[in-house]
Amino acid sequence: MHNKLANSHSPSKPYMAGLAVPVRELHANHRDEILRHFLLLNEEDRRLRFGTQTPDEVIHHYVESLDFDKDTLFGSFDSQLNLIGMAHLAYLPKAKGLPVAAEFGVSVLPDGRGQGIGTALLARAAVHSRNTRIETLFVHCLANNRAMMHLAQKAGMRVEYAYGDADAYLKLPPANPGTFVEEATNEQWADFDYAVKENFKRSNDVWSWFLGKPIVRPT
Ligand SMILES: CC(C)(COP(=O)(O)OP(=O)(O)OC[C@H]1O[C@@H](n2cnc3c(N)ncnc32)[C@H](O)[C@@H]1OP(=O)(O)O)[C@@H](O)C(=O)NCCC(=O)NCCS
Image 1 (tube, rainbow, N blue to C red):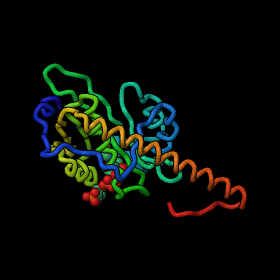
Image 2: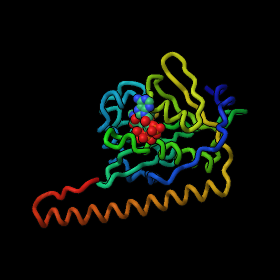
Image 3: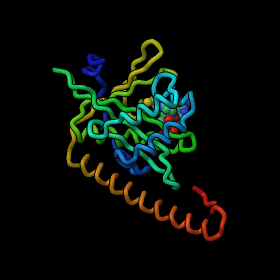
């Protein structure tokens, strides 16, 4: 893997985070939501996300062992504040003479797919990687994972196939003032979006209690 990282692909333009989907950084207090998110993935989605069959016990253990000081996690919340999409950026151990690298893993719940959430999570992880001196972003996935392959190629990643698996690489340019502003803007906007959704949800809950039935509004 490391030799491949040394030759990783350099896109013609650095991959920029769009502001279309708000993406928040997740912390240890989001552990329950992260667990809920993974448990909602069906068997096939878990296989695509983790590369193998992943029963509930393994997911419980995985979430408990997440180290928020070492790795970075990102999330996207729907109007009901469910964690509809999330990404894990795991920093790989440094090896002498090789680029500093991080591995990206992502999942979006079926209801949220096809709306640019996966793209936004990848873009946010790419800009965060640049801002934290990562030189190569890496995604390992099953070669038949067409949605992830499409996402990776759209981001300018180079994809290599071997034995039914695929590795995608993105060589990242160094950070610049623009990348710091971009990430801070996205974080602020995501915080604002979350606060608006929180107020909206609270007012819905009050009306539901008052009327004695759930309020149904478009998401
Ligand atoms: C991969 C995944 C994260 C994509 O999330 P998403 O929010 O739907 O992603 P986006 O909406 O940003 O983009 C999806 C793109 O893939 C395309 N796509 C979806 N299914 C596809 C398929 N079977 N073949 C080719 N392209 C496909 C969509 O058309 C869209 O392309 P566009 O942006 O050019 O229109 C989601 O499908 C998922 O959670 N899968 C299960 C877990 C997984 O596979 N994780 C990746 C391994 S780490």
